[in-house]
Length: 261
Ligand SMILES: Cc1cc2nc3c(=O)[nH]c(=O)nc-3n(C[C@H](O)[C@H](O)[C@H](O)COP(=O)(O)O)c2cc1C
Image 1 (cartoon, protein in one colour):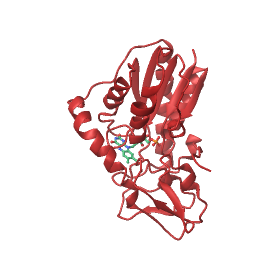
Image 2 (cartoon, protein in one colour):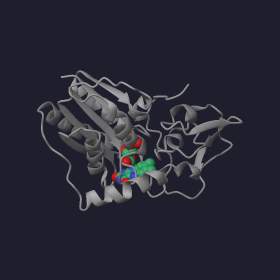
Image 3 (cartoon, protein in one colour):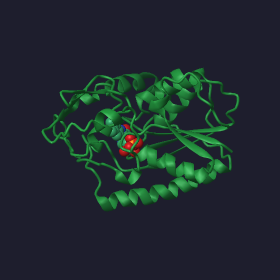
């Protein structure tokens, strides 16, 4: 069965899970959500899936926008099986429920959902894992992805554990939290280590960075993914305020997609 995997990723964790899953499912293509925002017609296969991170207990704002505003305009008749997988570190919060509810609004029902634990990218609160710990996360994730792929191949029907009050949380908290994340980049500064390579400009999934005088300047359309921070080759992007974690360039993920030239 043909599968289309819609993916959003900041540091590359979700991208890695999506590509692993695609190779286990066989005839599967990974497409990046930020590249589809202007699409009028998206060809949907019999099986579609989503792989995305949890940001502050909910799916990324740009993914919610994609599902509710872009996917909702597509023809859904051919879709027989729909799944979504979150990547998270500590607590996936209401992300699975929120995703289901956005999909429902767009006219889709969920057949299967699950989650994969990956290294944390939320540096304001958490220390970045060391090399060995990261390898362990990846090893465990590989086992989990294999199990998920088996279940999907069998056509398993399984929707996420609904954490307490998921419905009210999604209704009252999701939009304010997602809106607040749009300003997340205002915490970033750039140091003299910046070489003006423009990678942050090209990889930002929200096209939220302009190069001004050769240095990044952030607007207010951030997804809070920290791609610019983690993937800056010279670690020139920093927070204005003290944070607990360092940089997590995540070369392990193979994520080098650029959204702009
Ligand atoms: C702004 C931000 C908020 C996050 N919030 C949560 C959270 O609420 N719960 C959680 O378990 N992990 C959280 N994380 C960690 C990510 O969900 C996790 O590292 C994920 O695998 C990152 O995937 P990505 O590299 O595809 O963006 C957060 C990370 C960021 C950058």
